[in-house]
Image (cartoon, rainbow, N blue to C red):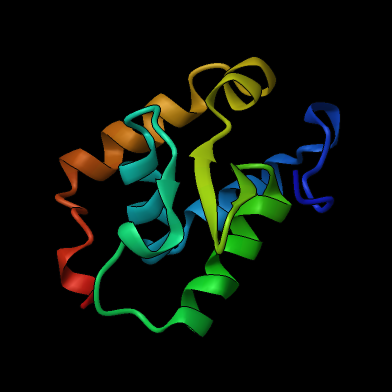
Length: 109
């Protein structure tokens, strides 16, 4: 694992909410909510690598995602279990709200 991942008890609600408050990062979380690992380049199209690197760091440092090296790429996955234990119902509420609001991420391109 990449060393910047906070331990479960170090995840802070203000960091999580700040990370999820950005439409692009919320679109990433919606993709990762399928429970699978995804390569960095497979999540959002048309976004520069440097921009996505910034968003990965914010999500990782907030405790929202796991990021692990795999060959020449990094694999990303949602820290659903940690978030559900730390803040029960939060992630489901945010994802439901994003769906209700129509936040597919399509408007980001």
